Structure formats: structure tokens, C-alpha cells
Image (spheres, rainbow, N blue to C red):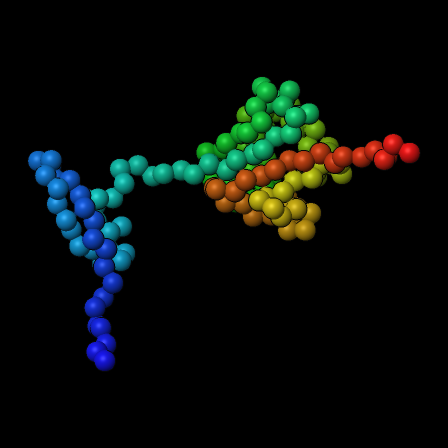
Length: 140
């Protein structure tokens, strides 16, 4: 049995300036250091808010709002949302700046009441769901 000592590599098929195909071999990590193939602009992945029906009157009817900024906490993300749609603020937070008791907020599938509340971390690709509590009797 013979052990292989080859280093992992990436092979990219690129198009040259003349339009002819070209093949280049790169070691992992090298591809992102090369200026000739680095992205021209940085790509921003938005954070997405999912807005429930009762609050859409305050977002121009939109059920999905994307924030192109890079918040680090839920409080930062909500501040960006409130800058775009100020009417939502009073429906989600109290006068003291806390999340209202009848509002549930999830980052992905995690309820923020159990992950740090307004200090819960968010990333650019997070999906934030705002869900009003549903109450009532069973019709009895």
C-alpha cells in the first residue's frame, strides 16, 4: 500500500481575456489572496425580518424586510428595522425598550427569551421572526 503525499488543491476553469478557456491550479486559501480573481465588490448577505400580518400596516404591507447592514445583536437589528419603519417600534417594544410580553421573537428557530433577549447575537444571514402571541378560549 502506498500513501499519497499530495497536497489538496483546487482547479478552476477560468476564461482568459481573449475568451479562451484556461485552467489554473490553486492551493486552498491561495485563491482568496490572489487579487486577479478576488471579488470586485464585497458581498453583503442581508438579515431578514419576517413581519406578521397585523404589523404589515406599519411596513407598507411588506411581510419580509431585508436589512443590508451588519448588526451584532437583536437590539441593533431592531434599531435598523425601526429606522426603516418607525411605526413598528411601539408595537414590538415597551417604553422602557424591552420586548412586549405578547410579542415573541425568534432568530431562526430559537426563541430570544432563552438566548439573551435583546442581546441575542445575530449574523448577516439570520432570519428574525416576529410572532404575536395567540390567546383565546377553545370555544367552551
